[in-house]
Amino acid sequence: MGSTEQLDQGSTDTLANGCKADSEAAKRLAKRLYHLEGFKHCDVARQLGKNNEFSKLVAEEYLRFFDFTGLTLDKALRTFLKAFPLMGETQERERVLIHFSHRYCHCNPEESTTEDGIHTLTCALMLLNTDLHGHLLLAGLIA
Image (cartoon, rainbow, N blue to C red; front, side, top):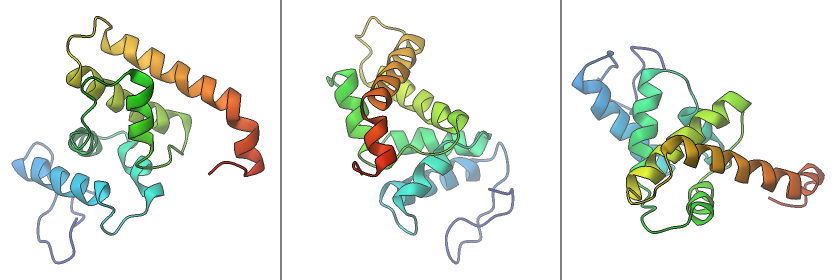
């Protein structure tokens, strides 16, 4: 998003790095993404995977809609990925999974695994799932 792009129809809020407006705009956009207000499922990963400070704020706010407390990592990841398809370039998907890992650790502070460890396990789960089901996805048999 550009620094002067308006987020809501009729909104006069603009984005300026480091301002409270950024935080409030990020919260509004995260809420709209979560509830799919004006967005499609496929738009979510695209927004969360951008590599700029505003998108990081949006991703942080978006992940607050998920409570992974007490869930195993695989169940938490399934819950998260039911909300939208994780598509896009590898780097974009990686950034989304970093946000997921951070939130999972926040919800489960008693886990002895570090955030980096959770992220590594999350990526491994994704790779194993792709190896197991990738041929079906390519054939269009799994949605």
